[in-house]
Image (cartoon, rainbow, N blue to C red; front, side, top):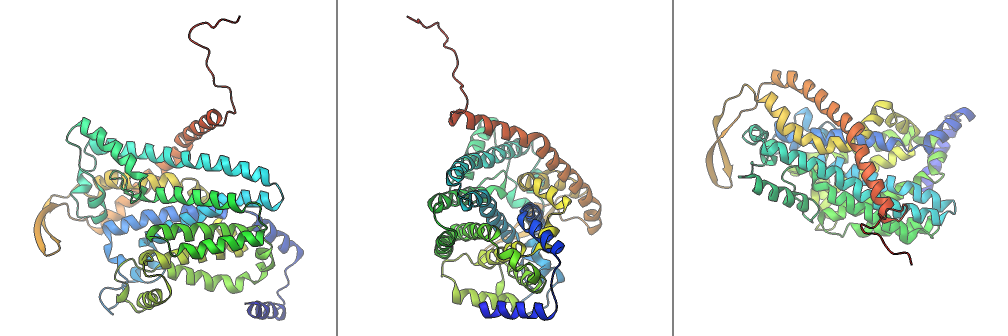
Length: 463
């Protein structure tokens, strides 16, 4: 590794890559800024939404080719197929969670403010639970309510795969509906989570678990020097590969995020900033290709079959196949961004920061809007027709709304996106502050920061 970096530095010297003092100062300011994480989080949320649209209206993207060793549609090829790669973008969420939650504590402990770092960890872990649970609860209640009004019936009876399987039936009575709501809220936070009213919430338990792993790891390693803390996190990173299925991807992403936070606060990004135009583009392409690894039919295309064989040789047998390469690709993507001032500036554009601001509401609300508003607009002029469906060896006939024409999509999708992004912006402006107020109030009460004792109902003798 040292020999390779020496060759790169020698090449840069010969090419007279000698940045001016202004360029060095500009790179230093850029590399101290972590707002790029918001930009990447916003992109990830949009691509998660796109992946659900692909599963609903363009399932052919799931496979890497049309048939075994056959030709590939351009949307099935690496990088282009990222619109259907939900697991890769969820991995980005996990990595960014570990990265962002580690930044301030690591900065404080590197500067010798250990007690302040410990206090920050305690407060952050408390707030994190509330800031995940309250929005998820509200989104579930909203989805449950419009489901009981029959708003999901069109989607449930459509030929759009993801919409039909994620649209629950109306409950038989309001009493049963309330019981179904309680079960949905409970099951969101149990292992193997399942929220019938908002399927994307399956990831929230793992995000919460990842946050707790972050805070616990930093609590244990807060007094270590940066080198030993990095060694401990590397141990956790490699140990995580042997964890069970989705938990392994949480461990890998979280420990990877902590390591990236350590890298962010080190001198390496600045030292190699002048070399980033050399190594960032090829590594970026490699990361996007790895993120493109399909969740099914991996053997159909040569590039995915190569990664499949490599996976079987180097990873544990019980590793989660459809998430291993996407997780590594996501981690490599974040590493490249940390090391590249140019990518950091690109991801810190105002419109990307705005996307990052609305990313969590977008993640929570897009499914409900797709099952209601989008379905109404797309299938408004469609009539139920007979369609054959298979369940194993059995074939049966069902009544479905067929997918509309391409022109209908061209007309409807822009209107849908305007309404959806307006709603998520309004949520951010008017609903999110309420969650902040509730969290602050709970913090004051439970941390004893404010006297909340009430006067007794009956007078008390003072003698």
